[in-house]
Image (cartoon, rainbow, N blue to C red; front, side, top):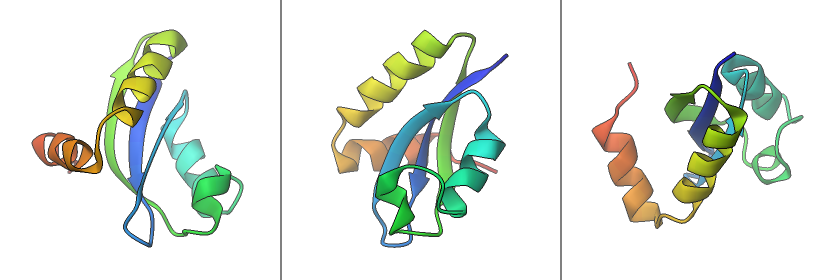
Length: 84
């Protein structure tokens, strides 16, 4: 089973970072208002970045490290690995 660290862009332009083992299901949850409290008032959200990991622990660790980045650093990370 794959695990993911991801960044979504909220409708107000803010960025939210999380982790999951089912990226599509998590995005649906965010956009239906059943995701994180932070994103509920900022719908819809759009996936702008993700990384895959073979363990939950590695995905959680990467999530933590991404959360330590400044907004500018996150935007640079997103730009470097643009999604199709």
